[in-house]
Length: 330
Image (cartoon, rainbow, N blue to C red; front, side):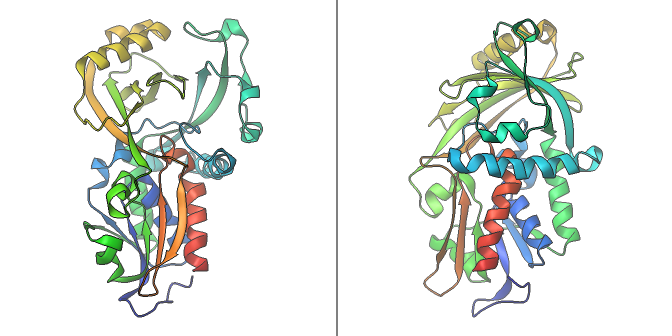
């Protein structure tokens, strides 16, 4: 799509609705292609679900499996580039262990992850018999989201606090020929899409007692996970994956169990000073991510791009590429 191409509806550029990692990454990718982009976000970036994320690159709780690997690898390569300037981008390459995971049980994408290897049992930490070692992108989300906004602005785009409430994204459609719906869980009402459902994740932030590597043990069929991610100024402990629970209030009992599970792997975590608690709702979707274009009654284009479950950060750049193809081909 040429940046000057338009139609009968207002601005000739594109409006991306949603200011989380998916919306911002999509907007940046469009702007990199020369499209004039405005992001409309109900919330400041620091208040989005994305700001709560851990956020380790790894395909987790996301479908369809046939697409996820390719999307994830596109993102992996981009994050590897961004890790060259971690202070600005928030992206670092950090070593760690995925416990309870076998290399043979992963998809073909795993063969393209540099350095991913099966550990001998004696090297797997905690009460786990198997595990994988890797050096993967770990993203400090508040920093990364701010970088995405700055990058968008640098490319001539804009970030605006605007709320869309009307059916068919009417407010945005009145100002742009092309609208990209990156509204996450809110698409349940805005589209509406009854396939969307929340998966609640609770985190505990503690002072880092000297943990320099990440760890995860995540069973996709369980509502409990164990992980810790060292981020600048804090260690993020998790977590939960509670389907259809929409409470944003941290549960003290759940928090205590999270700390206890993490301390089984690194005992020093048990005495770490608690800095705070966070809760986010992952936008899971039955049938998987939706990246699909449809014509509006006025002839404009509406591109849906939501339902990334627990892996929005992991697939952000790959999915943005696909959404940008639909915009530019529309």
